[in-house]
Image (cartoon, rainbow, N blue to C red):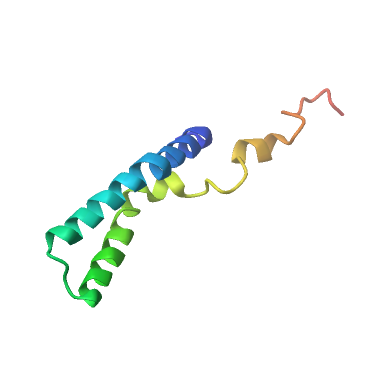
Length: 83
């Protein structure tokens, strides 16, 4: 997957998908009729880990500079005539 695509997709996941997932997680805990605090904590920790597992590859390396930009440098690709 292209770096720009991963960056845009990760932003979409964080801005749209995560709030929807939070609403779903709170709804699940409310459906359980408010369990003891330790059980509620474990449910939230478990759900907090589970949401990120499918998106590991999308988020990996997004905070780093674009690898293609690093290879060609800030001026663009080098030619054999640029010496």
